[in-house]
Structure formats: C-alpha cells, structure tokens
Length: 217
Image 1 (cartoon, rainbow, N blue to C red):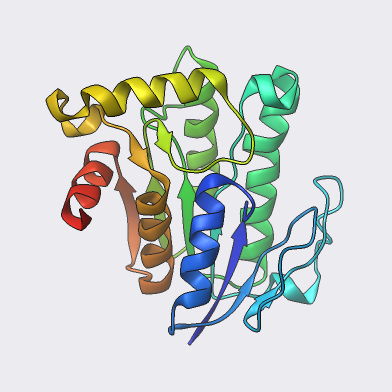
Image 2 (cartoon, rainbow, N blue to C red):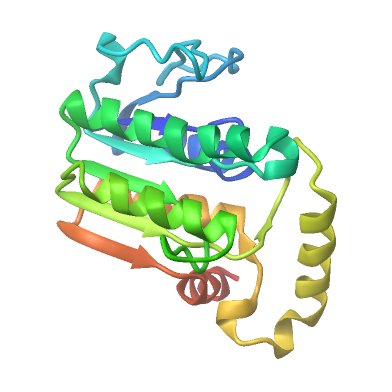
C-alpha cells in the first residue's frame, strides 16, 4: 500500500488520475492539494492551498510518490509571466516539496517536443521543468509527453478544441506520434509509473501514448 500526492487534480488529466488512484487497491491514501474542496472520499486527503502558500513543511507532503498533472496556457493564465509561474515555478515547487518530504518516485505531465532549447514558449518551459525536476534526485522519474489532449475539460480552450477535433477526424491516417492523446490514457500511465516506481528516468512520448490507447480500445 502506498501514499501518492497528486497536483492538478481538478484538470483534465488530473481528474482522471484522481479517479484511478482512489479506485486502485495498491493505494492507501491520495493527497490532492487544491484551491477548492474536492468531493470527500475515504482515501482522499484534500489540503486547501494557493499558489502563493503551498504550506511548505506540512505533514501532508509526506508521500511515497508524486504526480504533477498541472498545466495551463498563456491565454488562460493571462500573461507569459503568469503562465510560467504555473507551469514552471508552481510545478517545480510541488515536486521539490514532495522530494524534501521523502518521496522517491515522481511522474510529470510534460509536452510533446519538450526541449529547454526550443524557440517556442510551451516546449521550452516544459523542457526546463523536466531538467529541473530531474535534478531533484527522484529514484524513479517518468516524463509523459502527450500531444493534443482529448477528454472532458472544465475550462474551454477554443484552439485546442478545434485542433483536437481535426486530429480525431483524420487520426486513422496519421502516424501514432501525431494523434491526439486521450487524457484517461495519460492519467493511467502516470498512475502506473508512480505506483510501480521503476528505477531511472523514463520518457513516454506521444507515439507510446497512442499505442497504449490502441491497446485499450
């Protein structure tokens, strides 16, 4: 039995990961810090936090492993600085707190094409985050790099929704790496990685996600 901390439990991938963790018999407790209260569950601990006060050192940071399903866009964040604060600063702070509290396993939702040397904001930010999290020294680190996500999202992203619909329509003729990434598959890969905790650094790319989705269809 294991305790897993999940960041981003109210997002598309995070909500799927939360449901999977709560239903998994290998998980004793799920710690899901959020800004607003989640529906209660016998296995759920739900600290209420803000990005300005993560309650460093609180006892609920102690977990065997952590999952970050955090992610936003510049448009939704309101500015480039606000976007970086969420997708880099906040995500890294959570990983750091989990590691300091003793976690040895971590799974991170990244981005297809993540590269700290990219000329583009999104892949560069995710690439920098990957590098920074790796330096924290988790014994098991899994980086899941989805393409355009598909699934139920509470917030509406017009451009992403249109692109996702287009990719789904032409999906059968696309190579696996170019297909949409179902949020439930991304969540399942994150959950399995952090529970299993295979030693080393592992990258799950969009092609692998598409193949996993095909295997479950």
